[in-house]
Image (tube, rainbow, N blue to C red; front, top):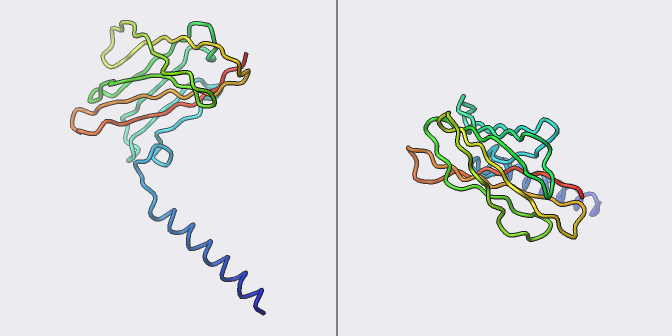
Length: 152
């Protein structure tokens, strides 16, 4: 009987902890707030605001990301947002901040960007692109994350 009571108490505590975690989660956090994307075969990441409004941050890669080659992408922002900073960093190995090179665009808030990733001793490298965007009406910038992998 004592074992049954301990099992029920443990299960109840686990359910209670999970309930608190779900109820009190931070809706603005990068992972739960829709500010993180795993790049897949579509080569496209779309971020909507927390209210699922039509305002989107769109990142479209021209091709699958490769090391030691020029990689191109297009970042499209809503009219009330401006790009503050953008870089790529290694996840499973420190590679510093990889800079992005901007190219001109005839459209407002469309950024054509290029970057080069160096190869390293890791055959399967995990990367994270960090995009910092400022809304005109808000003091706090928003940060978006795109995760992707490369193979040598």
